[in-house]
Amino acid sequence: MTGKIKKIVLSGAASVGKTSLVNQYVRQRFLDKYPSIIGVRIDRKEMHIRDFVLDMIIWDLASESSQKNIPQAYLIKAEGVIYVVDISDPSTFVQMEDDIAFLKAKLLDIPILIVANKSDKVNEDEIQGIIAGMPIRPDFIASAKNSLNIREIFDRLGELMLN
Image (cartoon, rainbow, N blue to C red; front, side, top):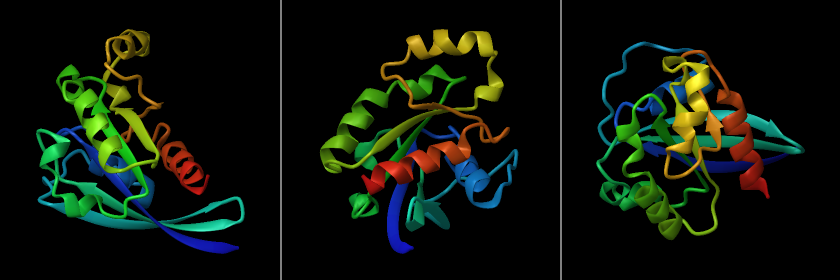
């Protein structure tokens, strides 16, 4: 098997569950409360895709009002992005279009997955209506609390980074 190191960045508004997604993926653990991140928190997880061993270096970025406020050094050499919103909080969708456009302009030709987290906080019947009202359709509906689609998100990003 061939090994590759890949840097990924988790970004999005405050309190959308970025740290919860990382903790669920890396440690299979969910906590109800997390201290706010100042700057960046870096984790590592090995994954196997096809004939590759990917060493995922996961940068969990502190929340900013806009992606334009993120220190640009945090984005250097990123090869994938997971942009997270809280499906139960429409205020987290407000910057979504501008943020994604900014990330696409800064990080040319890298995969960006949009994840609507905290699906455990809304009724399943409401999800399609909420998605219809979002400026950009998410790639995944997730719940870090219930571990819904967590592995699938990171697996998909790994696949996209290898293509």
